[in-house]
Length: 364
Image (cartoon, rainbow, N blue to C red; front, side, top):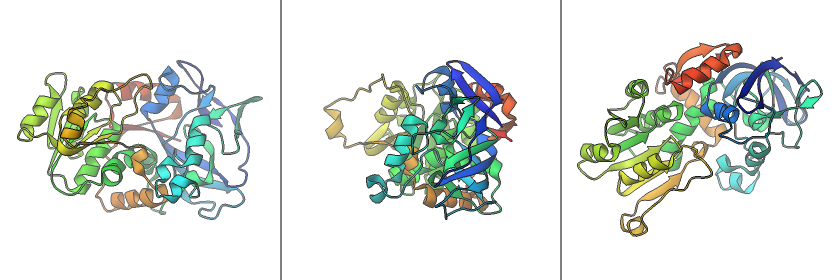
């Protein structure tokens, strides 16, 4: 089968690889679609450190082709969306209803191997690492069964793929992490794939004012489509001052950061009102630290939260998100700006960096 493999830094190769059949608690999935996410590009350019060679792709959907032993929640022929955080349902964090922090999922993402530490994919005699044990940028994927969520028969897989990462992360940051009530003001720093879905989450939650901040005019136009009431081009305007002006000097009730940079995290915190909530969704560099004033921290009673994968319970939230789409309450069609073949992945990454797409999708 064809797969996108990063063999060394800055080298992306579309090549033939072989796969083993699924073992117990595993599935073979014929991939139909995979979203083009910046995290995959970060593996290629070395921003995200990962043992190479690695098969890319973690935001995918497809059809179950083969089921290993001890799998009961899906069968051959089922449509599934894949989650880059597998959730075992048994560890401490799953038991306290924080399955997005699942110990099994964490171990898989640390190793990019199956739960038993092995890989099902090979290039000739060489064993390949697999992004989140999914490798969704390939024609087939052998995945942990707990990472696959069954979808209804009428789910369009080219749209459903995005629920595997960006949609769940963004909408979940609002509904699950912050548990934002109706009304009030929201600011979103960064309007890429995740940021647009934070905006969608704010719309679903009933926010009265949604302010989008970015440096790409094209992305700010997308933000309006997804529900932003105001946009700020941070190249031309101090976003903190502009947000305070739009919120009667108080700052926003809820601020979300979807960039993962020290400067934008600090700006998001600065423009959060007293007793407001600032949620950091963007994943930044392990080398950076943010700076907070120790006097202001208790004085203003702001909440500073991290949000990992939208605090999601995938087997609860992903079907709900698909149902919201089928009820026309969640925009997925508008997210898929351009589709690509696997051989066009380099161009898809270039388009992503230039802000051409809300989200690009590779179709198989």
